[in-house]
Image 1 (tube, helix red, strand yellow):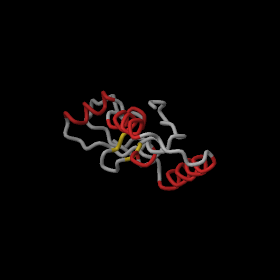
Image 2 (cartoon, one colour; image 1 turned 60 degrees about the vertical axis):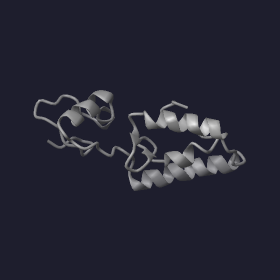
Image 3 (cartoon, one colour; image 1 turned 180 degrees about the vertical axis):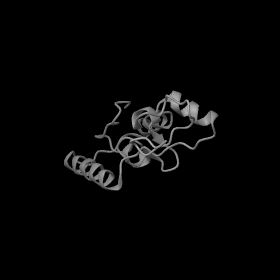
Image 4 (cartoon, helix red, strand yellow; image 1 turned 90 degrees about the horizontal axis):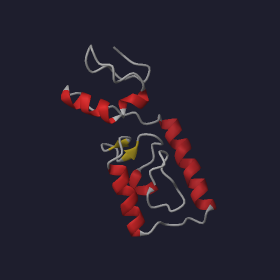
Length: 116
């Protein structure tokens, strides 16, 4: 049965995937894995991604384009890789849609889920 977020319930008795937020929970991820269902792409649409990137870019330029240290970049990336919102197929954040490798380099930027 289609959900408001466009995803399909993984099993008739599934009580996990009710909203887009639920789709990225650890419980939902494990449930989908057990049923052989691919991970959904809960990332924002194309227009929202462009808006989010433009907003981050303007903020980054206004801050003087600071670059995070290599150690800080690695710390940030390691946190993104274990985040339930990380989309490995796109190497992007499922909340803001930004490419993780780029955003983690910008010292003035923050994680939309407050992980770094």
